[in-house]
Image (cartoon, rainbow over all chains, first blue to last red; front, side, top):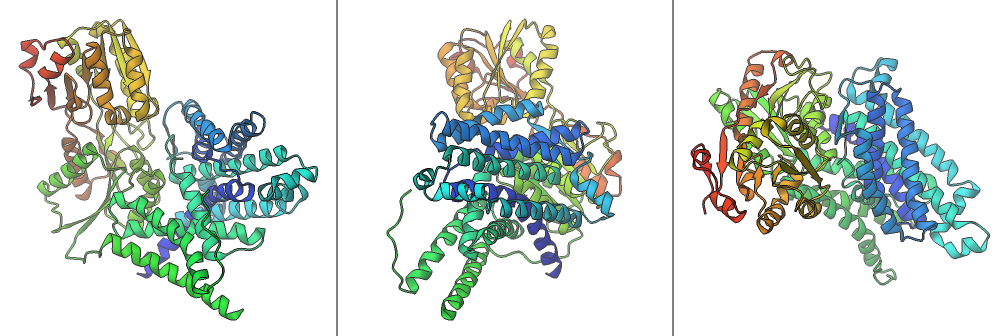
Length: 303
Length: 336
């Protein structure tokens, strides 16, 4: 039992951190900007594809990961430009770029799948550098350091004047425009950063699982949303720093539940049901709590 | 104020309890241990007739080799339900369980397992992988090198297309496949390499990224080709009905590759391997490894093609007849 927990928790923590980049990206668009961005499924695979191809071509894996982040920024830029400059609805713009990325990812990889088994990745470099032998140990170190860096940069950025403008754009776009802020610019910035983070997640995941696949992004948007909702419901965060931590926590719980379900020998078809049940519980608990406390309840929103 | 905090805490605790209970409820109870010698983890990317057949073939053949389920072998069967990120989670779980061997079915599961066993001495045996060298899990076909070996499902494309050309010689042959599937691209490349020897002058490709695109892809070939051949492709396999419909409407003979996923869907012919045999072939390698052989030195096995499938009714609907001398070679005919 101790052995199971001793393995399960660190591994889920690792998964929570690397998939946490995706969840933070989803959080930035859906919650902060109020921009329902579906590019995610494409930009996740894009990150994996760019990093994998560069690594196979013997580029330094850290540079390759950075390049993946850059590619993700470009994908987000494309979606947000379609939305702000050509006035294509956000949902549609995201879907268009996601679909386009499928073809682009195939072109980048020159096929559907790139294997990284005996290649030098950020994980193998770190294990050599620190002399760590245990797989989970260096995986956690790499994911942890990356997460801390991302956390501090975002925590700083969202408090700057531009960062505040991005946050305010999601709250009340008209008011922000009234203050003389170019909301097109803040939307572009937010969506680009979001997809950059998602692609970073894709790059790290591909190096951890030792392959990139054109289908690896499928379901990422659902996972990201589920993680955000679980994090918000469980931790009720206030303030930027706690929010970011709550999203990471939500991702950790999401991956932990999947791991537990697999260990319990769940039937394959039921695996998706877990996601649905998890999100329904996360959404319903705050409401039920209020009901128990006899607080005033707003009518159901139909977005 | 304090009350509220306590309520919040209780709420969160309730949620965790409910989650756990839900999981336990849905999955049922875990089974108890008997006297088990070997623990084998079986990881499968999705539920699919061919992949299920490979799993059954593996387990049955292992029993013939003396490794009987429930007697001296405990199987842990897991399925990623199509989610690639779960493939890695499963592989990691098997490593944490310290299994004696991982049997991985299909490409992504094999890659995930190969990555997870690095640094351990757990061997991986695969099935339903076409080119293990291309996907980076083996150094070469003869000497895989690492901890991974297995049974390839590499089909003899030339033999498959030749069967079709023996029935109805076509100069312009149409091919429908998903360019996103490595296995399909490999097959189409092989076809291009051997087309002259089959009397084909032109290969017309139509690609479909999703099952919804297959019908359009099939339509695009009408008037451009004399016959259509479909490689072993998961996307087209799901939507094979739409290809059959287009071919029947326009009298274009349709030839298949794999028997179970493509051929039986309404094609005139198919020539393929049985994934049950593919799993059996993998089991023979697995047994050798459990007896102490080094997986890195066991050559990757090819699975023999054993099924020639022919369908006279389909041929009639597409406006041709199967020559009797070809029909005589069939090991399986359609029941209509």
